[in-house]
Amino acid sequence: MVGSGDEKKLIEADTIITAIGYKSNKALYDKMSGYAGEVYLLGDAEKVSNVMNAIWTAYELASNL
Image 1 (cartoon, rainbow, N blue to C red):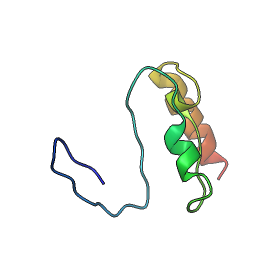
Image 2 (cartoon, rainbow, N blue to C red):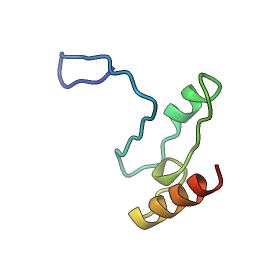
Image 3 (tube, rainbow, N blue to C red):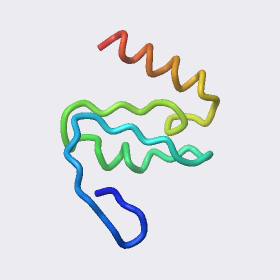
Image 4 (cartoon, helix red, strand yellow):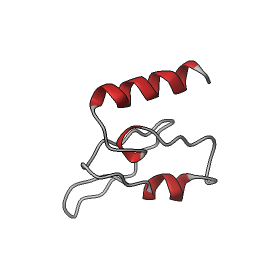
């Protein structure tokens, strides 16, 4: 479900990427782990850093899939 305010909408997706906050938070990862398919923890969810670190870790992960 996505939406702003009281409006919510269900969107089908194969991939979801979130980019919010300045504090490590792996709650979504914990909920999604074991739910469906492969779930990876990277970027600020893993450890707060800069955008280059997030891009690099995502690149490394994708290169090894």
